[in-house]
Image (tube, rainbow, N blue to C red; front, top):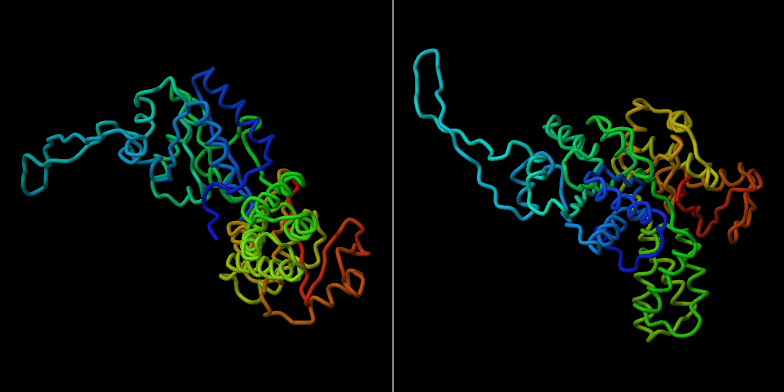
Amino acid sequence: MDDRGPARYFHGRVEIRARFARLRALAREQCGGTIFLIQGAPGAGKTALLYKLAEDAKGEKWAIANISSVTLRDPAAMADELGLSYTPLTQKHWGIDLKVITAGKTRKIHGVSTASQVLSEAPGGERGLLLMLDEAQTIAIEADKSALTHILTRIHNGKLDRPVILLAGGLGTTEAALGKLGISRFRSGCRVNLGRLSTEAERTVIRDWLVTDGKATGNVTPWINAIARETDGWPQHIVSFTQPAARVLQLNHGTMTAAGLAYVLRQGRERKDEYYQGRVVEFDRPARVSLSALLRALPRKAAFDRQDVLEALKSGALGATFDHLLHKGVIAKTGDGRYWAVRCARPIHAGLADPDAPARASATLGRPADGQGRGSWAANPHAESYRSGGHVYGPPWSATS
């Protein structure tokens, strides 16, 4: 399953697209620009949104460049990305050694000294230029931080004398990574903590997969309802369930059966497991066991503080563990500085903890013993989960959508 590109079916994110449209208009009016940041947990649909926003900009004749952090610090790479020829100049210089004097040494110097100068001097300055940077949380690991700080500051403050917007997408650590490079105080509306899709957008995407791809016939509402109960507006989960659903429908010539739906739900849960298990494979067993217990105990939609996680982990390098959880996208930051947890279908420790722990957690929280359907936990009427085959299922939630 490829989640590194445009969404096959894109719906929703209307308010974010409107914000970005206003920014494009302002950038052209003022001949400036800034950084537009989209951050969120894995599977939130960041990359798909980047491509949709780029598509919107292209419709207004903006030039689009898909860049990396190397592009931002290397003028030759920037010129290449913009389709410009770039020939470094050479210059003679005299090198003096303590023992001998050597003449005629040649060194290369760039025709333009910085990537920001390439941006400023490139032709077509009256057009808008959109630089699209995915996985932006990795930018802080670049060695040449001074060059990155220089160009990021000029873009962020609109100092390139042309409309330039850096559209950056990354995990919840991205804002902090940019902060290490001197970027702070985002313009109003230019920082997005991406959450779930709206119910309407989610159901429309599922319907598109079933009807357009799967050629479903008849009433698709029961299948949409069943899949939506598993995905809760999370784009990665939607794809996990709708891809096998479309295949099953194709094989059955669009006919929807109970057996087919059961197969789709099994496949979707397995895919959801695989996706999130891969995010925690680097953690040791005690950390996974403790984290699993914490996630099971948290009610849906509940945000928590850093200290809540540190107390739950009860291991050695707590701060480093927490930061790594944040970096891997297991924990994501909300707009108000608190955190929320990405949930996967099975306990995150993948069977390493006490197999009776889920049952004990259920009893502690006062959930009904039968665990059927999407019942409420007596301990918290706003909490919701459901249980199947001995596993506790719960979707990811964010405080911002």
